[in-house]
Image 1 (cartoon, rainbow, N blue to C red):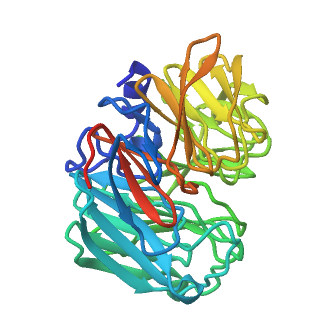
Image 2 (cartoon, rainbow, N blue to C red):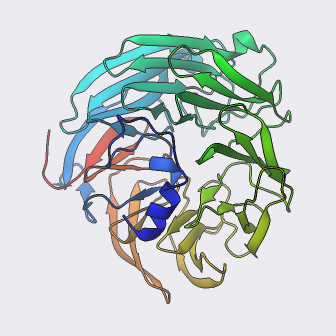
Length: 408
């Protein structure tokens, strides 16, 4: 793992002991860093009717879904939705090495299933502590299973808070932190951020949030939960939910999420990408730099890697900047559209477009170059997962495991 990623991980505490190096336990992987430098990953593959190259296995999925795969202890978990109006909310578990389906469980939606045609009820990415998987659906149904598919607990959040509503579709993902599942629930109705006990499903704390639609995923930074909406970047105490500090600076994004830099600074996307250095609780954080060129696009979250920042703009140009100063370094056009966030591995950047093409990009401070373009012939909107030398892509129809050596 690169030095910058190691330094960032020092601020990401509270992961379960059963999460191992090489696991991918939440949206954008360990700590939400979207960095996988623990193994060698393929740079070339093909999946078509007449050719398979570096495809370990594929598995059919039962219905729609935009959630990413999470992987821990040799098991890959993913969610889907099916049935009339997407009311069947499905969690699946596969053997990460062979693709064998180990179990499938479903619950019925209790919240609204209205959404934009491009999204679905299986938009939030689940989280795992290695022994359990915690799945949040866009209906505000929250469920926990153990690694063998036994139900641990279930919550109908619309049953608890009936005014929850989002007619476009919710997509913020939960994260696991210090024995708690952090549940973001910004919406047009009763909005909140909650810490739910991972063993019981009961609220440890719950704080009110502005009633507005928001699709950001929280970020764990030491003993703080970092969250943002268009009005502010804010930090909450993991243990108590106490508001520690906030920063109102320009317009923050409501889809791309904040990320960590090398020294614990927070890179917050919005009208400008800003590098924020928090101080003591109650102190106003310091802004180290701002960049309007690196502000990114509507959907993908920026990436910090090897002391550089990578952001994909609305014209599907990958922009690279110096993470210390915010200085713009180079641009590289990618064939769009792109909904998935970029991921770093092998000293490269991997970007997946909606046509299922993955661009593998080599780079230095002067330029980025597309080393390979790989296709799987499926529409891909979900951010890929990287674990133990395998890359996991998911479409509505298939879960695809890419790696050297074929399986099924």
